[in-house]
Image 1 (spheres, rainbow, N blue to C red):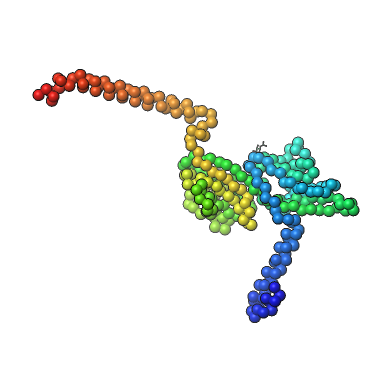
Image 2: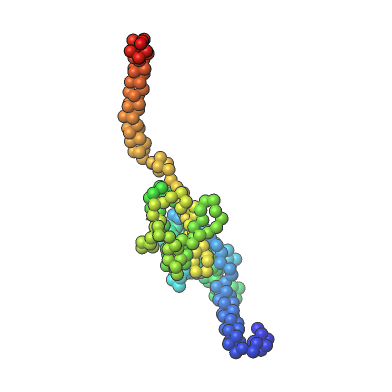
Length: 268
Ligand SMILES: *[C@@H]1O[C@H](CO)[C@@H](O)[C@H](O)[C@H]1NC(C)=O
């Protein structure tokens, strides 16, 4: 790096090299501080997820969990009212997951070593939440995915391998059919082409949320049977009408056959 700076005859370029070098050092420092590469953890919305700490330390005195510079309260057991609780030595479980749980988490594990000094390990986790929804054709598809940390939303249709931009923090929505309400991304008049996967990425391109959207058939969605009943009720008058029409037709043709020899057009 220093060599490049010397051989360069533009003072401006020298300066840029220097800044880059310092940035790299800063980033290295950050990586060291936050422990290792983030562990990716995926869970279903309303399901549960475990952040495994895998600490070999015997004497863990405390753990603390934080995300977006905020401390996340961790219950000592599952029985308390919170959704986040400690399990075993130092694992942390999240239950009834929601989209807003997505993001980066830091777990600090404080433990005593053989010299009875308090030491600290930091682990990083990347939480990704998945969900599945089905929408009827023509209705609106409402995705509650625009978290404060969301940077872009992409769509991949069922038969495609490409991710198309739907929304980004800098450019907004990419189609006239899409509107934003509260934190929701709303796609109006859903069609089969809107089915597929929608993924939300953070500022570092890290996946936060993935929603799989399928097109629902009306009968499949009928859980209480009301539509089924009205379907049959609706069909009965039609059936009666069809049967009547068929009967009339039979009556007319048989009447015609019976009278063919006496019809004026045929006899003369
Ligand atoms: C799960 O969380 C949602 C809100 O995100 C809440 O409405 C629901 O009652 C919770 N379910 C349980 C079983 O706690």
